[in-house]
Image 1 (cartoon, rainbow, N blue to C red):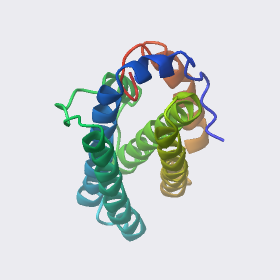
Image 2: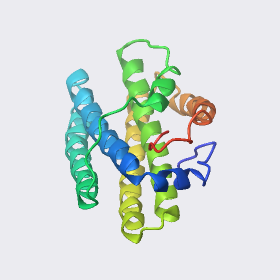
Image 3: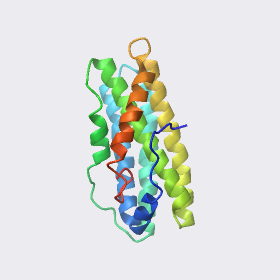
Image 4: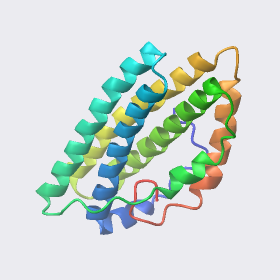
Length: 193
């Protein structure tokens, strides 16, 4: 379904499990950034009422996910660490060349779709590979949400770009690019690291 070209090395879950407090902190900030991104879509593209409605709902859902991850952190006696930069996302941004307002919106939607797709895939790896049963179930549940978000962003990109941009071709090219990018990551206790 996700059509990612390069799956996560299953050994990444061992890195994650050895420092679950770091994974949870990184995950919490990923959820916060996703909420901020949804709000940015509203602010930057208010002329798309369907998008605004969807992003308002998404911002709320992502902050609920942030709270859920934060609860997991507190439950284990950890503290929410400091935010760190997401090098994966920074590398993905390099794929896009800019353009008119519609092209920028489609690019941002495709970027969001890719982040959600990779997060979904990483959550699947965690849900299948972690030892702790509670976290396995936790990540399996979140994996389903990420899959729906990925689909939503891709659908909006196709609808908004229709007749102006070959979104499916751009998505295929972006999938190839992401496969190259993800090879630089996978050795840190970060959701995209």
